Image 1: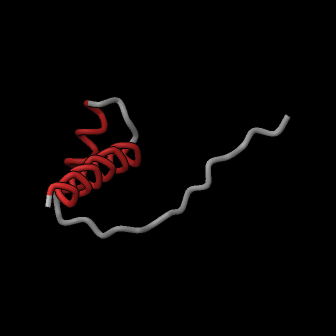
Image 2: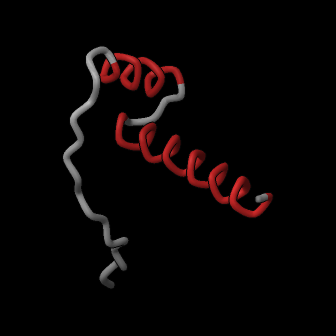
Length: 56
């Protein structure tokens, strides 16, 4: 049986100096890949933006 795959898109991002190391360290602390760490924080940021928009 073929498993359904989640569609994902790739994107290249230029990070400010030192940010890669911060992401790498946080990912290690949280036992996530760097990609998962970035996605986690993006999701949190968008949730907060949505809350702020709703409150305005």
